Image 1 (spheres, rainbow, N blue to C red):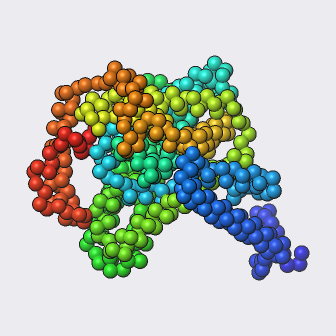
Image 2 (cartoon, one colour):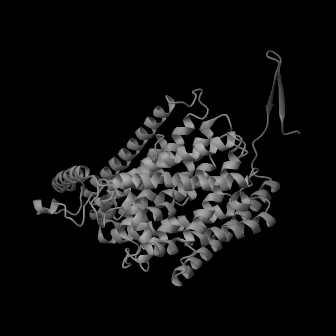
Image 3 (cartoon, one colour):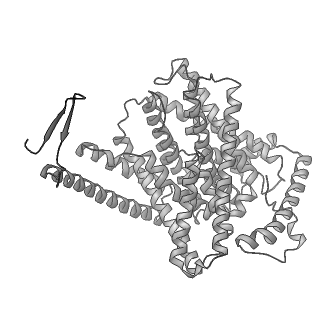
Length: 536
């Protein structure tokens, strides 16, 4: 080629080639770029039409009160159909495949923030003790129970494609499958027509929004020890749990600190005079919280949830009226759209996941392990929680515990974590997790309305009906009475609530904004016999 100059350097025996820069792309490159653009445009069109269909089907389901088919299940089933068609007609399935990074950094943050921002704080903090028991203690129990059962069954040859030497692999599976994601159940329980029991809804909602973050932190903690030279024994587990609790506390600290910083900025500036800017800036600050936590190796979900709680408590009163309405509706709308996309892609993954190893025995036994582990944490921990509760409406009855056990659905977070499983058996874990997620969402989610009716977990139903006498008898046998624990708990609650309300009204809201109650009387802090705020 005459346009290329070659020079031989005799002193160093090197050959130097000079070539002129390319001034314009070749025809082949232009055609290839146009082909890629056309494929992306077709895929975007198909995805948009599919989302519209899912939304219209969700409207049809809610309009006709088809409680046996939750909206999340509808999106999954539509995804299965579209995925099957794509597998037969499309060669490149990249845009139809579930991407964990897209999930964690684009789809998930709006859902978590909206859950914290729209949190019904009274019901949540009324039962914060029991929620924390289920969230932290229950997740740890479930992770070790599922991990141990998986490892033992693998060592006895009952499960294939599972490492029989490294127990940490089974523990990783236990951690990820402990991510309870009852979106389908909550969408039914939150329906005004059903009038779900308020205590049950508070417990299920509170556990669901925190459990995912705890499961992710536990998964990351175990992942550090997967390729470590340390042998999993009694000395390693306490260190892993300490790392887990440290990461949890630091994540909450990041979320609360950034929430207070944002509230302070909005409180002491005039940004409310520009509604478009204050709404946009609020959204950017929220994503900053998630990105900051993830950048420092913490839990972005945990940080973002508590960031939303703090902003709702303080900063929502600093916003203009226009921005208050805009932000609430915008966050709710984006969260619903992202949820639909997530369940749609989970359905697509049935045919587009290209899993090499799918062990039906592992999938079925994994589902059984989840049910056993769920029972091992719900019933004992509820017994502990009831030690600090009075008899009556605020006690967690055996019927409530049974519904809590049934409501432990697995969802997108568990599946996304399974896509990040290390080792040669990752496909086996991912396919088993997808099976468990789809079964619990479609089957268990579809039976939720019948379960609520059967166990009398609707407002207005007589919970002492003859149909439930069998539960009442068993509950009386295992009921735990601890007058000393209840008395100490009530005293601590009253002292804490009195101190916190004074401190919050006089100092925190002065700095960060909020709905102040300056004339609160001492009697407002007393606990009534019917309702124990901040109950365990």
